[in-house]
Length: 120
Image (cartoon, rainbow, N blue to C red):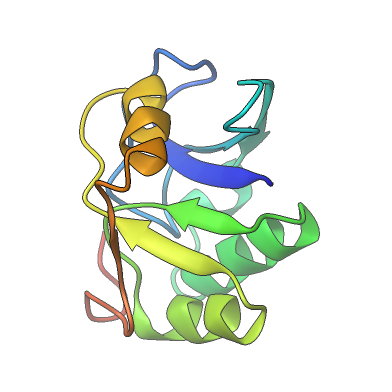
């Protein structure tokens, strides 16, 4: 099992980032072992459009099962849904907090995009 958490920094004590397509990093965590790796999302930060789709491809390419983020636009949502990736929202605090909230079933799955496209 691999979960991706949108984050502002490169370690488990980094804050979660509410943005998906324009998040600074994706922290990929095994929730059982807490082993992690960080994927830089800088290639998508300044795209005029399509950041969510490109970020979605990054998540898919890294074999993620669950994404924890704050907001996911319609195009990114469709890319992730088509790949079978579960999207959860409502995490607060640091990456480690988000993992604990996930393990305690405190996060909400979304069934559709929860923000309009081009949200920065």
